[in-house]
Image (cartoon, rainbow, N blue to C red; front, side, top):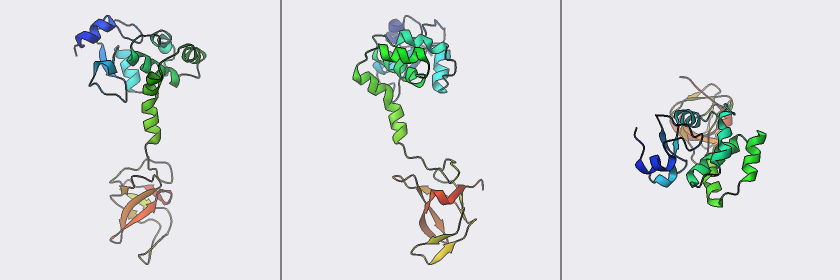
Length: 193
């Protein structure tokens, strides 16, 4: 994919993080912002791009380049550098880089915004910590007294096509004996059926 002319000029046809002059440079919108504005994008080489996309920062020595890119005049480059350095702050050099730079508060907020959104997201998990999604089938792990329906749902009952309660990670909805009921996630396990 050909780079936008502005980004090509701004980056001098090099990765804005590690300065690699790769023939396959990529435009990358720094999350949670979208690629609807050039100011939200950085130019990345394939190595940086693939590691960021996979959230794989294990190649610690590669990311030492951030000690230079954090000083960029481009807010998107600063935000991405800060974000990655924050993930590597157990490394002395990364921690020192974060402490040595004074970034605008808006850049720091941008760098932290995606993690904050993820932390605020409601995630439903069964009694064993397995992720639940709408439409899954679950199995009851104990007998449940169904309030208002005058019956007990026995352990081992399969509840198909569950719905997640949007504002409570501890609750799902499902039908048992024709009645839609709220079930606590701590009393179910995800079924493979």
